[in-house]
Image 1 (tube, protein in one colour):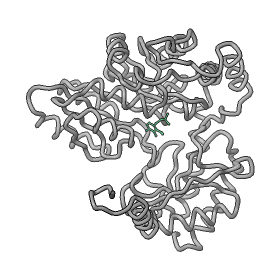
Image 2 (image 1 turned 90 degrees about the vertical axis):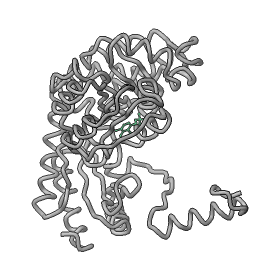
Image 3 (image 1 turned 45 degrees about the horizontal axis):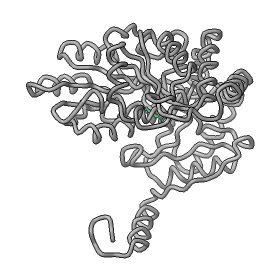
Length: 388
Ligand SMILES: Cc1ncc(COP(=O)(O)O)c(C=O)c1O
């Protein structure tokens, strides 16, 4: 039976759907990479911590002490002393009184948004908000309205027309995952206060990079008292795995009672929690690492821009090279791969149609010299495919 009810055999409609994707240049395949042999711009290990001896050691120690798995959900026996200690440390880092750990950042977004909004409520998100936020919107059954990317005026228009009754939650990322630009958080927070809306900020790409001790942009702007939820992930700059949100004790208590991804899924494993704890300690001891990463990314971006390449609105360690056409992005990515440079093409639906791009995630594994050489190679190959 087909998805849309035609009585086609399963294999036939699947083959057709895959064929459609292939012809549109949108087919995706899992590839196995031995990234040791490549210059990897596809990872989010921004501070180069995933392989750091201190994280490996902390993960091994947690594994030895608590075992390979947490064995139960948080509400049963899955909350180990390590989870509680890490929640306290995350809260302290983020400048909030409490924090809640989830299995992943994706699950944190699902859990928080579906807990704070329901069918009688309004959810207002940036148009480019991450897929996990969009999926949470569907699950929450709230009415969804999206404001133009980073446009507080449009957000205000929506808030002004907000229907009476029901709660309202605004959600934005602080650093956008595909453009590397930053949200105007102070304006958004002011509007949330003015229109009596809750505010949640997804700091997946800002955590570890921006702000004091890598706390992110909410804390860098001093907005902890205006942002109800500062969500983050341990799977990017913190080099480990798992998601979390920093919040008030009341929100924490409600999440423990209502957030289905926390209640109905096993707690994340001790080794990942140990590694994340070590990453937070690293941030306390190396205040300058986020700033150093941003300086390297700026130099890289400026080289591409000077050659006439389009890096969009990026101001962070995420540097897109906007190509436009899907096939052209695939071709440039393949040409770079032949030179040992891994920079995957990002195509719709991950980005809007007509804005296919290569996404370069700069990390501290990339030395300034390596970044300069890579930029030269990109400029040369982009010229060969007619981009500059
Ligand atoms: C903005 C944003 N939010 C949430 C997530 C989900 O985080 P995780 O990979 O920990 O599930 C990601 C990344 O995948 C992301 O880019």
